[in-house]
Length: 147
Ligand SMILES: [Zn+2]
Image 1 (cartoon, rainbow, N blue to C red):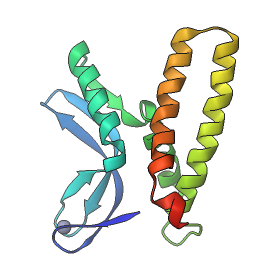
Image 2 (image 1 turned 90 degrees about the vertical axis):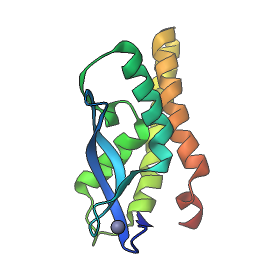
Image 3 (image 1 turned 60 degrees about the vertical axis):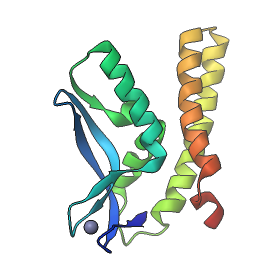
């Protein structure tokens, strides 16, 4: 999972705390980070989720720390792999990510079936939102085609 920095160095995947307007702290946000010049950028794939979360937090005027992986399914799957994966391991991060995303989708579909069985609308909506986040990524992912 790599990307080139504007300084020419390769950036690698990392997770960090981002602070917005001095009051909203969001932890475990996946970023590409450059060791050479400390430049970092939020992963494009999770930007819509991050912006949506920021909007909600601003509207509710909540303060304090939010764990991004509890809100974004994609960030959660990435964080799970990131914690245990090492550079020397095979398979690659990308193919693991692809596989774990598909597993997560199957899990969410099961949970959705359960929520539907209980006619729990709020729960169904929550699961649909989570499903949409992660299936968008899998459907648009460059990784799923190259691996
Ligand atoms: Zn750099």
